[in-house]
Figure 1 (tube, helix red, strand yellow):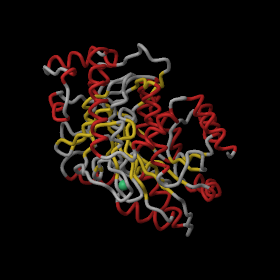
Figure 2 (figure 1 turned 135 degrees about the horizontal axis):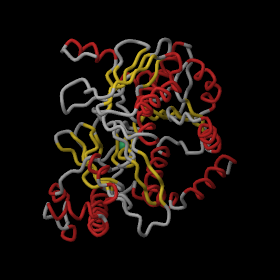
Figure 3 (figure 1 turned 90 degrees about the horizontal axis):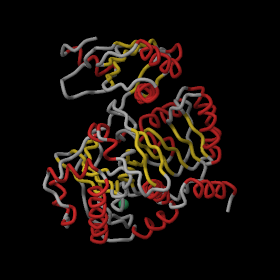
Length: 437
Ligand SMILES: [Zn+2]
């Protein structure tokens, strides 16, 4: 056992002793056939439904209204009788959904806030274990173990004290972190990246990094490049192959739902059927998280669109259903005067201000031209909050971006179709249709 493995295993034991047990379960269930997997799903789903009815006033009311009786649940088709819930439902009914009774330890979790509405809730130990174990199993398909050296792209805690703490945690996990892909930051990282076995993070940021490495005529062979957060386009994968000598593999997940799918070496995104039920209605994903005891996620509209689900044995040996390409998660680049950034930073800014200062329900960031971004906030917000947004933004962009905040302003675009970020290209199209700043 290497020192890195020892430290990692110790850390996992302290964090949550259920993780390895759940990992062993997932390694065993990887050889199940589709019937076994679906039997497991039905069994676990029934338990979750009964649990939710007994412990969550929100679901009790929802089931009663729909005349749905969890005790009689016996087939997937019956799920359709439960009306889907949205993030807004989860947020507004938080107290009637969060269950604390009977859990020894809970883990605070944030949603990424890509809809502009952050949600905070608590996961129980088994849920946390199931989530992490699914990730470990995915890595194992590529001969990678979590304590192998790796680079993570993303993260947003700008507070220097927290950043030091994250750095220490990363160090213990044999991992380094790139917060952006500015040339200076990337150059510093290259020696460690060369030693690493895998690279993971936001797909479009990885694509940006690969582009910069190509400009430097650098090839860095890795065992795995894992993209999350946004759509992986074929040209992302092509460039990855060229620079890292491996494709970009997709992990599809969300804080509320855990890891829903992980791509295998054959290029199929297998649903983690042990942990979730994925329904696709009109190309939209509806998710039931089978391990979400402390905050039940039942028929949740995650706001992603996807191509249909397939079944059938994959060459990799798994019988797990395969999800099509996730088509509804698009992030764009944000241009400073000299550097390029990932638009997710804008969500982070609003998320942070929402959690620490004033909850911002509806926002949109618009980039009309390079080096300039305007935050449109629908409601009236205190002056101090405006200042706070600008201060947060300055932490990321410094002098490289002029930022503005306008409150009491409707977002651009058709009603009901809020896009949280309008990049330069999109702004051009929209202003041609009459939506202008
Ligand atoms: Zn496969």
